[in-house]
Length: 46
Image (cartoon, rainbow, N blue to C red; front, side, top):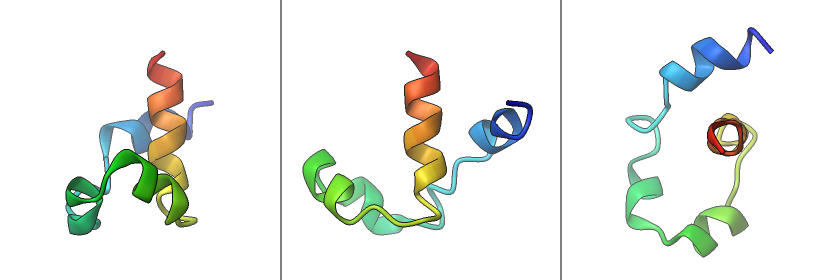
């Protein structure tokens, strides 16, 4: 999807400071509509 490409380059990491501190498990449990793009980008990488 062409829409995922631009979003992939613009990771909202700066918008989610706790995202880095939280563990992968905690992040998955606290996944937000906005964070969904991050998960999609990771899966797209693999």
